[in-house]
Image (tube, rainbow, N blue to C red):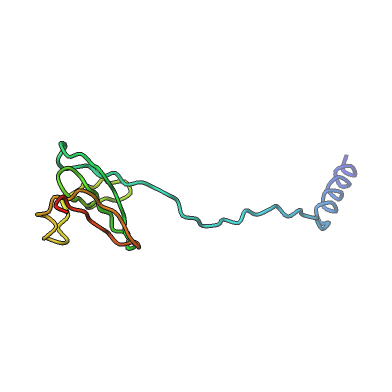
Length: 114
């Protein structure tokens, strides 16, 4: 019994000491990318009707509604923001806007007077 055990252990040692040829597994190269996501903005006045939305070359977003000119405020990826009245140019608050658009990536406003 001892010679069989001795031969078996010798065989295992010889086989385990041989150089193994390992196959290289394919490695996935992770490539970064940008992913689109949306941010929800609630209207403060539920009676307001949204008409038009435009963005300029700087990424500033303006919305034309029945209550005047609005802009997004305090929205993040998982936290909804609100649409508040635009106060960046105060003389625009008194005007009754009929339309909004962009020309050469700049905002153009049309009022009801002419």
